[in-house]
View 1: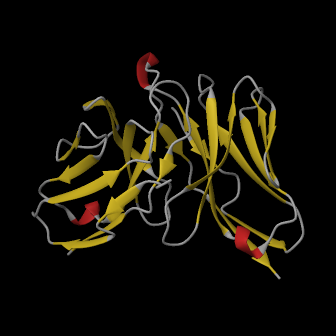
View 2 (view 1 turned 135 degrees about the horizontal axis):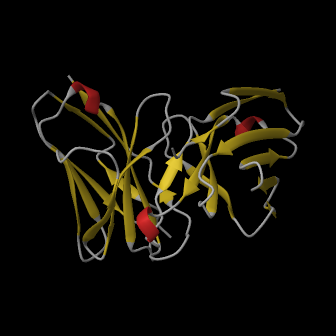
Length: 113
Length: 116
């Protein structure tokens, strides 16, 4: 039973560039959430996708956008990268409505030069 | 405002001892809580969860206690092992404006170090 998988594992970009991160949810899960984790901090919620729509959004600018595909996989896009966007980006999947545990992938480490 | 935080940033214990990691939350409307373990270079790993209609829940070597009166959550690890060394986060799961889709609010985390 495959867990949450994310790609790539590491990425280096320069300021102003754009990046796309990818996530495949745990088998049987239909909801994908994205989090940003700065060094030494807890993860911060970016947004959540269910039925291919953004359902909830955290306090992140419009430079952060996403997409969910019919197979429940998801992408996180960040435009006009800033140095402060350097972080570990985590994807978590869960099963639909109600309070259900979210299971995380190992993240993509994004470094902005 | 809403926040989930931990009382202690670091905790060191001897192998075989019991560990207790504490967490305070401020949103009385939260109805679901999760403990995660995060090892270096990995994503958070689900340990145990508890709903607000419960005071206690036990898993394998772990127990979570919820005190809604003082908005306090704790994770107890029995017979702590070196492999338990990691950062532990409590997370509060609450949807926005009545949404039934939860979102997680994390605290800073507690670094648990287990000495042989």
